[in-house]
Length: 87
Image (cartoon, rainbow, N blue to C red; front, side, top):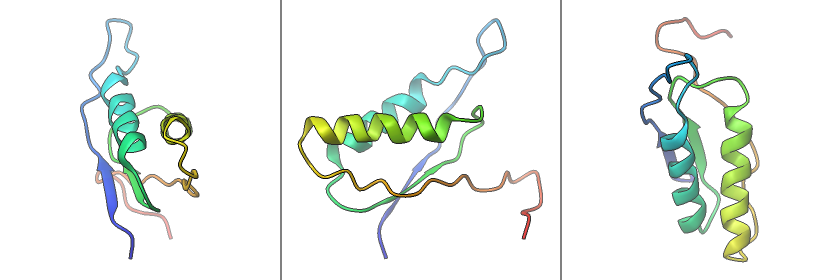
């Protein structure tokens, strides 16, 4: 079974209420720099819809810089601990 990365960083709100995703993006960059094989990457932060796509894009860009084959295949977000998981 592949090793997993859990991206569990803070996403404080800006004055306008938008999430500060700088830490989420930095973790994605670091994963992309050092990933060498298939991994499961879980975003476990309060983030807006579409952030998983952005994280995948950042990881792919970093992988491309190292000339490794991109191996990000699927994305999912675990259900919030405050809600019941849907079947």
